[in-house]
Length: 353
Image (cartoon, rainbow, N blue to C red):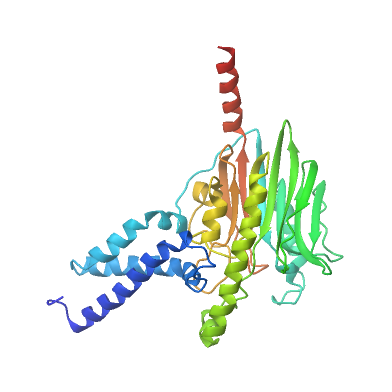
């Protein structure tokens, strides 16, 4: 530090703060939100903390200063977090036996005119029909007259009690069973359908965890009373944990291969994401590109919408669509049963021996 100028010392002080904050954020996925709900807020800032430490690393490396080691070590320790934040993938495969799945929070089809556009509903429907997914999971669905996804043969819509909005799943495959988890004391929920695909039955969950009730602008957050903000968001994180526990119980009882779609209202660095995604493939990390941003929040690339799959599925492709018809972006993946079929063939051969 002796050879550093006053300016460089100040920069290194900031570097130390951001590095410490990132180290603390690394352990948040392992701390139940009920324990320290206010700390969970830090998980939303991990993209900024990662990018900041990368900038600090480059700054010191260009100046040939050994201070670059601090951010380098912190980033190496959290290398998996970087992979969750940004992906570079050329993975686009094809298969004769595949299923395409889309997840989309439509924000009640612009019910309260958040977007100054009278044709949002029609444009969303047109977009979905253009992409033609085999299965469509919609969060924040609103039951209105001009909502008609006529291209799908089957559907399950579950509206919350005494309301006109909820969750929906549309499918081109037969729905042989359906159900709702009925999250208590909230308008959020999770539903599921069992769909028949040739000889296989697949359970598809559509999950919408508790909203953080944030105005997606940094300026607005700065203007808000910090105590009230922390209290409100902390309460939402506690609800998310309870809702996650209900979902995990349902997953434990599921007898079929599973696909989980949804708006987790939390980042891929959170406790709820770690718990739900355990044992599943994240289709973005398998075949995505870029930051995978799914939620409009100023300059922070938040990925809070996900599609998780059973390990037996092969992820052929994943796409984020820059379609600004909601405060969320739609995502879609294409999956195949190739590995599943190979596994069955191998078991049959072993039995024949």
